[in-house]
Length: 192
Image (tube, rainbow, N blue to C red; front, top):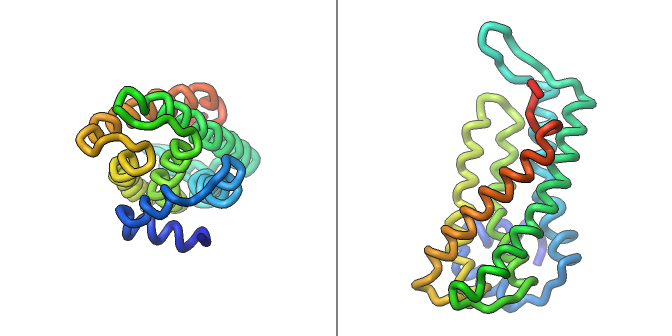
């Protein structure tokens, strides 16, 4: 399925799209090249451009613009760490499956990590313009996508979906906090 069609379907008809995704053959390489690589780039690229071109208002100091080299470096580091984070999150999802009466399947777990991240990745575009950055909160729709995808892809009973989703979200928070620490020197933003 074409990238734009998949994005549209997972956002607008997620229940039906998870059933389609469940049946599709995939590999780590196909998921990364066909979906994860392009979508995960949106936020880091938008943020780099936003901080370098539009800057960030600093109270009592005016607008601070990140030097282009620093913005590009931060974007690259954020992108690479996001790509790694998606894979590690898939390993966590896979490892948790038996706890929630699900089926271990690393590819299905990577599909879940990737496709449920769609809203978050798309919301990254709002990092481009300072006044719109608050709209990145729309990425929380990814939590709903994750909740709907858990029972379909990981074969966990529907009554366990909320618990499984909550544990995945908590694990993701810890994971991405650790990733933030690893890349913190570069990801501290324009003041870093």
